[in-house]
Image (cartoon, rainbow, N blue to C red):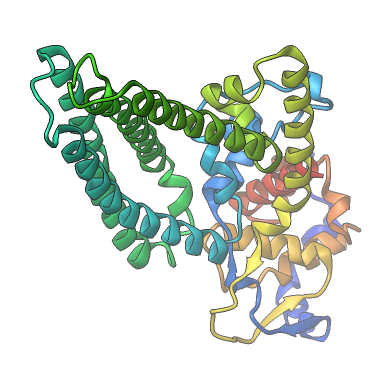
Amino acid sequence: MGVSSRSIDFYEKEDDFARQASTRSTIVHAAPSNLRSSNSILQALSDENSQLAKFLFIGCESPDDIEPINSMNALWYRLALEPLEIRNNRVLIFFECITIFGLFFISSAWAFYEWSLYRVPEYGLLLENILEVCFGVALSCSSALAFLGCAGWLLSTSLSSNHTNFVFESRGILCWMMYLLIICEMSVWLGILIGTYVKLNPLNNPNGHWISYGVTTGVVVAILLVSQRRFLTWAIHVAPLEGFHVLPIRMALAPTKRMKLELKRLAFERAKEIKSRVYKDRLTIDPLAQEITVERSSHDLGILLDKAAINLGLRDFNTVKYEERLNAEFFFEANHLRGRDVEFLARYIPYRLAEEVHSLLKLEDAVR
């Protein structure tokens, strides 16, 4: 199919139309060139086979259709979907907390280790080795957490403000830090239980007493179990989507069939809520950007073209003339382009711009 003669005549007059565009365009402060969008996120959301699209159940119509991705990455996808300023601030706080608590874990693990061995007679090679392993692992994990948290703190301070994909690309190291945190916690609790046995069990320590040993062990076990149950009850209401996608958490949150169905329902509703906001969130205006003056169309078709140009890195590119070309073919709204393929759009706008417009329209359809 060829371009109509009417379109050819129009292209020959595009300079005139570009000059006339100023009468239909508006002056925008903090213009779309300041929109802070993450191309990796947009591309992943537009691909239904990507983990991020599966995380939001894009393409699923009911809770019965959803499937978990079984990945620790799911813990960080929601943060990666936040507007740039929010997610960069939160990841900075996270690395800061990990650094501080990593150092705290080092001191607490060492204190428990010293308490377990203080004024205790020989208690056997096996228990000694297990205790040494527990606190050795705890000290190693907490040291690694402090180091990685410090490195992440420094990198996020210097890079996250101008790297739109910083959080999304940091999901691997964030997952590893969560593994270290879990291993550290398990090692410390096991070490405390062994230390209690070593210090208070009369069979091992002549100075111990059955009552003090039983009460202390019961309190430690009760604190561990109640804390875990409280955490899981809280998590199923505040993070059902993340819990559904992470296998160990899902098994802990929903051990029965009825609870599994309830978790699926809550996860699907949470994903639906996120999808209703994600498209808008990916195009949040940067409040820190300097106010500039750029001629932009006030119509939704022009805004769509501007968004596509911005995602290609052409932040100051004027798309008014391409909007005029589409108007000449009676395409006046963004909705008029729905269902059109890239080859069709490329007749009136540059090919890469056509690809991005097609991707944005597909993404907007998916998150509605």
